[in-house]
Length: 71
Image 1 (cartoon, rainbow, N blue to C red):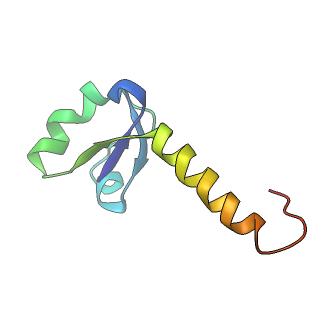
Image 2 (image 1 turned 90 degrees about the horizontal axis):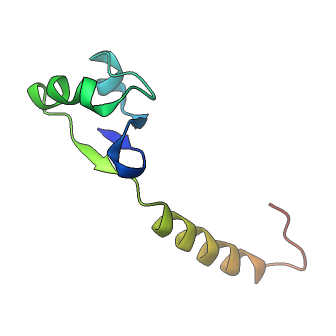
């Protein structure tokens, strides 16, 4: 599995299997795409809006657990 950056420009996270194939971190996706497809590597687009929303929700829950929260 590979997670791609905004606009699917480059790999920002890779599974051990993707690393073993030689898919490099920050490499332009167009350079690795064919190799990934040949080996069945799944590429997913990052969703930073969702990550931010989930983080905000978790911080709200954590804030209710104690008097002060520093992150």
